[in-house]
Length: 278
Figure (cartoon, rainbow, N blue to C red):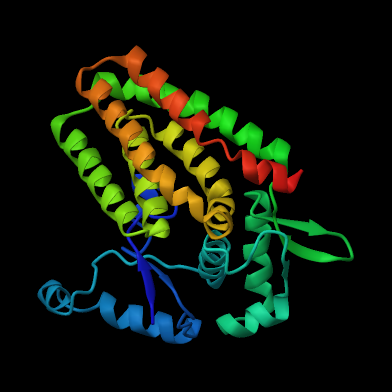
């Protein structure tokens, strides 16, 4: 069965990035076609009359994705959902075979993932999925507190009724997921809330920075869910804190919004994960 998630479910994506990605994440074996077949399909589509393009639902603007780009997205998503667990070795030959590609685009994808700190390369040992150290986790949460606190402060000046309504709907879904003991959905709705908060600040640079921090934490969060079922008991408190943040934003109170977000983030500091890694 194909597992799908809504856009942004596993992280924050600036609008220009979302436009170039598919509307859902699909975690399954990809269908990779040859470059020749892809180019033939695109060439045929290019010369269709506009009205035929509409009927065939073929976009008028065609974007090319290299095999390295495709491999990057697939491997990154495998890391984000812990299919490739933190600390595990990446067997290039096996992964290339699974995706139906050669080692060359795979290595380009791994180089990009290394730059983004999703993987680490050890000379003469191979490539491994990055496992965050206790110090790195602390640094990420410290940065989140500063950046998202600032985002809340800015959002209190700019947020509109539609954005507030969207955040309330997310909280409603989050509470419903908690009542069903659906921890993965709770995680997704939590990230959706923080995504909406940062977007409301109208600062695209900030959105990219916070996105990177959340993606680095993603695999750890999924591991925590599997190892600590008691996390479900804290979800109602998380929703209440989110609603308090919404209330501060609706009253255009930047000082209170910033304070509530900073306290909220540090209350979620994963002390148990730190101890396990220490």
